[in-house]
Image (cartoon, rainbow, N blue to C red; front, top):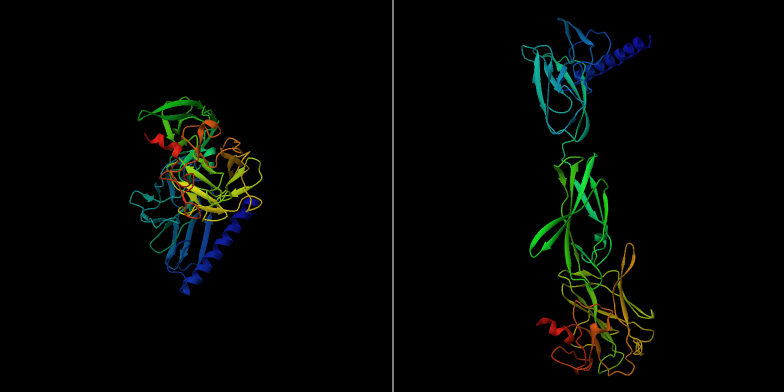
Length: 450
């Protein structure tokens, strides 16, 4: 009884739709027939129930209801089209173009609600149509049969899934989020390096992690691990004082127990520099004009510009702080002058900052000179560079100069006093020569050029 009531209710709904469309056609709203018949209808009889039909095992559903359309010229009877191919609609299609074919009464037109593709049923009762530009994922298409008078059958419904995109793997390195430069992964020595990767499709995969190293101009791959996990913490073995090192990383994807590589990630380059940005010179004694005309110089050893947002300097006792701004160019110097850009009259300051409690008093304690350079990153504060602590209470006034790039900053042997003047010396606020080389290459590092 319930099934019969459902059939009757379905019949009522369809009759109402047809009446509405006929009214709209009469009023000029509809231009052609696309869903139901638009010819003059006196009666519509549905015989039988609904059942699966024609589409194989994967979701093609064609009703077995037969349209009997009674018109002024007689009765027309035809069924929905039968879908014979693709036979298995439960498969995942790897192309966005599918050819559908099947059977219907000869002479009928087969159309669908996805595209404008039309097919005419031949004398053998066969039809075929190609549907392109299918979307990724699940789709449902209704196929209809239509005669020359515009009578339209009930739909044959097909549901299927398309996944035509190739398998891809995306490799990421956590620490690269904290690179010293924007467009490359440049890091200070660290351990470990944390790598993670994801694939675009689920499956039983094995992942091989490769480290690619420069061997005298030839890049050579070394397998680090083969695993079903999608993370790896790699020990770099790099420490402060290590030479600059570049490694590239790549992940290969294979099916379990198979040799063929089915996907590979793009290579990610990581460059490790022992001292990307350093405290390069400290004008602790001021200038010949005033002992409070202090200055500090930073040096960028990288081939890229460093954005100094979030960087700051503090003295060894945390008694004052200088927040940096702007950027330091590739291989460039960054001069910080205390309180006035006239501290070094012939060199423009990159930053003027009033550090120290009292501008008319020295900020550097000659008995305890030392600086630390920090940057703020997402995981907290990171020490970028740090100097030793000096006692210059009885020393001749001058500046403290860093010597060579490949020396550890905190070692006393990395630094030398500059108490004289040469071609690189600056001028104080009175225009007189003063000690130190603010904004220029250090005298102590000049032998590094030969």
